Length: 106
Image (cartoon, rainbow, N blue to C red):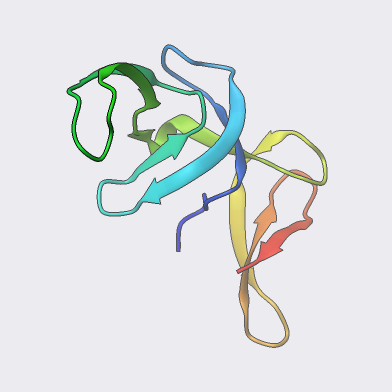
């Protein structure tokens, strides 16, 4: 279980986009990377094809390492470390280490 999931709000803590706050579009667990909206944007030269009729230069977000982002707690609205704990019913949940509130049930 990873500490960052899709649709989480994260803040970038290192790199050229340091300080940007955005939403996670995709998590790539095999490579330990995440794709964050409007972060680490690269330009890709696209050739015209039958599927994508027009070619040109396309800007798209590129993966960054999961260690370079921190979760933004929806309760206290601060970047925070994430912990895990088990509830009474045996389910494992993520919680904010600053305010102690449950981020969401997993």
